[in-house]
Length: 121
Image (cartoon, rainbow, N blue to C red; front, top):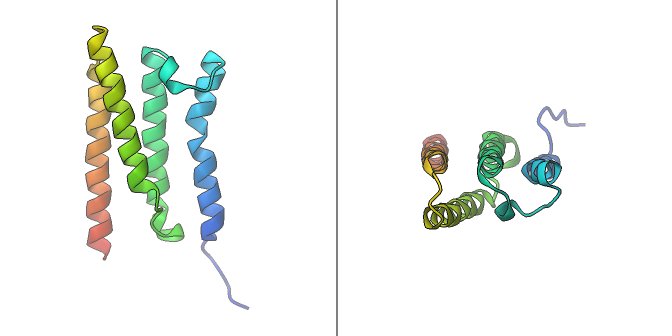
């Protein structure tokens, strides 16, 4: 019998998918709705920050579950959502500085993870 010390990839993938539901649960808890684009200012920033944090924590465990195939799609979806909210905020004359900082952090972390991934190859 083989002694396994690392968790199975399927278990980690399910755990990551459950973790990605946490920002949506936060939105539902605060506003009683599931749509993150219908929320305002600070609540959206918390949602966006939680999504970035959980996404990169999930990528730290990629050595146990392999490189998650949806990681690049997740980053692109977060950037598209951030740009959409940025345009909406600029159109309505709202301050968007924190959102810009979060998007810059997202890009820096994405580049850092790509560098680590390519370094280990």
